[in-house]
Amino acid sequence: MEDVLRAEGITKRFPGVLAVDHVSLNLRRGEILALVGENGAGKSTLMQILGGALRPDEGKIYLEDRLVSFYSPEAAIRAGISMVFQELSLVGSLSIAENIFANRQPVGPLNNVRWGELYRETENFLGRFDLSLNPRRLVKHLSMGQQQILEILKAISTGPKVLILDEPTSPLTESESATLFDTIRKLQAQGLSVIYITHKLFEVFRIASRVVVLRDGRHVDSRKVSEVNEGDLVAMMVGRESQTLALSCGGGRSWAWPGSWVPEGPTSAGASSARNPRTQDTSTWRERS
Image (tube, rainbow, N blue to C red):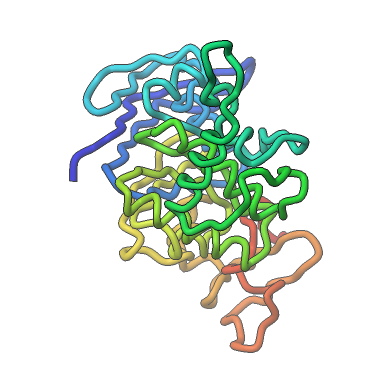
């Protein structure tokens, strides 16, 4: 499978911090690539560089084997890379149609919006994903899950080759997340390549075919999802061998997150979700003393 995006030796420094340290990665056409790492690993910084929000200090970016350089997110979008940030950019007082095609509405000779055409285009666009939303509906009346999906549809309405999603399920319920995953798979079936940032490791196995792990701003490994388990990913994220982690098997150390306790030894089948690493956000993990 050919690469649609390739980054080589990407480096980004902030005062006193080396946020991204000579990281290289590739994204194949039609692939969903998961990107994981603890807080401060460099995930969002790297993706903001690929999405044009930040300029790298070193390194090169290739889009379909063409060397590219972005000075803004708008430049990246024009080239074919769209990024959906954790903070939604939707305007609640505007309609679904107005948000999706913001600043790109069909207009007449006097620059007046052709509302009928706008609503028809929006309805056809939503239909590609089996969504039966009314294009005239105000965004403030949508659920959080619907708004997250709308944000993604807004990003792909420009026809990108690459879509970057930064923690898209953070505010969503389980059912809303399932709907989001269905939408992402439909985008993949249409040939879109996706980079999916997440702290929820179980999502890697639900949505991605390959995973890249970052630690302390560096590229640790790239693996097929079928070749790893959650313990392997955590070991790569924290820099310890998986057998030393008390996750789903016994180990010499136990790991916890605020407000909970993880017992040493195997996790029982009846353990609550509060003690199950498959349901946890790894950004809050800490090693027990």
